[in-house]
Length: 352
Image (cartoon, rainbow, N blue to C red):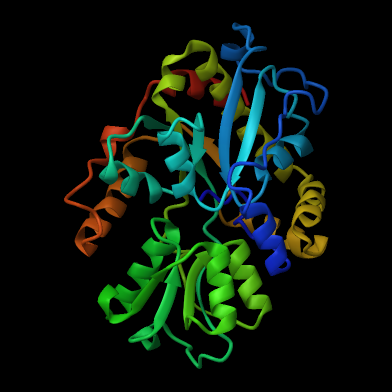
C-alpha cells in the first residue's frame, strides 16, 4: 500500500469507506487539468507521440497522486492517466495480473504473495521511497490491552498480504509470541475499523485512514511498524506495457513527474496539498498539514530505480513469510524485478 502521505487521510468512518469502496471505479483523466509546465516532460516522452496513450494506474486510499501532481502544476500530461482507487496494493496487483491495470503501486509485501500464487505478468520497474508512519497495531477502547504481549489468545484483525500482516508478525515475534498465539482475523481496512468499534475483535493491525479513525474512536496504539518497514513501495508494470515503446515512455515520464511533484510540494506547497487532502477526507486542514509535514520529514517521498539493496530487503519479507508458513515454499524476489526501464528512468529522474 503505497501511502504517499502515510495514508493518513480520514476524519470519520464514512470518509474511509467512500473512497475505498470505489475499488477501481474512482477514475480521473489527468491529461487536461492544468497548463503544461516547461522543462518537465522527459526526453522519452518528448521523442514520441503519446496523445493516443492511456495509462491505467492504481493507487491505494484516495486520489493522492493526482492531487500532488495538480498542486505541482504537473498534471497536464501528453498522455491520459486513468487513476483507479483500491483498498490495498494486493488488490491492485490482482487487477494488474488480470489485465485491468497497466501500473500498480504497493508496499513490498503484495508482490511476494502474488508471485507465490501465480506466474507474474508484471515486473517491478521502480520504487517510491516514502514514510512508514501510521502503520500501527491499535487496541479497542474497552479491551484493556496495552501491550503486544497481551494479545495472546485475543482476536486480532489485520490486512492480509500487506504491510500490516508483516509488521504484526514481527511485533508478535519481538514480544515472544507466535502467530498461532493469536486468533488472526483477515479484514479489509474499513471492515477492521467497524470490527474494532463493535468489539468483534480486540485489536487491529492496519494503516493510514483506518488507524486515524480508530484512534478518533478511542483506540490506543500498542505497537508500530514504523521502524520495521523498509519505506520501499514498488511500482509494478505489466509485461505488455514494458514491451510497448510508447506506453513505457509515458510511464517513465509519469514517474519523473511524481518525483518532481514531491520536490515542489516540500518547497512550500504542503498547505496547498493539505487543502486538497482535507477536502477529500473531511479532516481539518491543520491536521492534514501536520501529517504531511511529519511524513515528509521522516522519509522524503522520492521515486528511485531500485537495485540490489531494495531487492534484498524485499527478499527478507519473502523469507519471513516463508518461515511463517504462509508462502508455499520460497520466492525469488529478483525474478520479478526488471531493469528494462532503468536507463530511461534514471535519466528522467535526473532531469526532474
